[in-house]
Image (tube, rainbow, N blue to C red):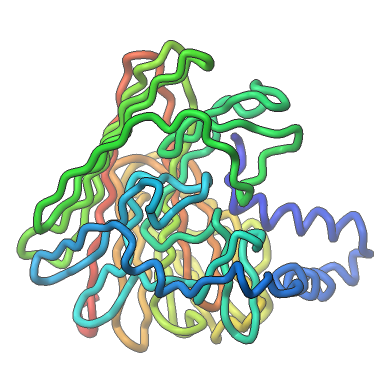
Length: 368
């Protein structure tokens, strides 16, 4: 796919407004409609469960004595049951010096919700979007070619069956081949595997993800190796939907890049601004608002995948790096989280492999 799914959410709304409204009314009406789309009638009460009910689902607790985290495992009783995100390990509640960098960004969840809704100051999230962070997503492989009722690939999920409509990232598709999964853990790491072979589509892969806390450091690394074991080549891209929690409304949060940042779409007025290499929140994001845009300005070198996201008042923050060049970036945030979403392109012929690693450095007051 040539356009990331979170950017699609923004652009679909924007394009609708351009077609439906006069240019003088676009911005004000856009904010009203974006809010209305996230404030529909509440889901049936019987379908809603509190986010805290996820805590006891199968996971491994890891700690190096400096940083601790939970790595939730895939499976029938796993935390993540949607088909949007990579099910091969969802990291949550990474904590350093008492600050939880990966709190749930929602208060409850329900399969009756489409994406997420605001109700009485709280977020209720759908099955598709109900994950904490860091969590990853691969773009679809073979969706358009499959045709209505055909099969397509989502790496980290499996072979899925599509419908007649265009791909909808918040729709949960039937999984027709989930492949085989495995996991092992130490006190400081979790290694997860996913092997898939599908004769009908010709797709196959072997995928290994290792989440590791580095001894003696406030650092987490997530290492990946993906090998194409099928008969067909595939092209995809992967990003981490970081779901970072640094303070209510993201007030005082700043995102800094090694390049001059360009936002393709305007931010909510008065909420945030771009100045050179920095995006800075000017006030707390309100209920129903979002601050979001595709981002450009990066080059072809891997050194551009190096970002700092910090709360300038509390001093807590995170440095996010990878050892691969960027293919695109999307930026999305609401009142309960800030998500900086850098993409890495992957193109593998049968027999080829690719490795990539994310590095997260956590820091507190006086350290960043």
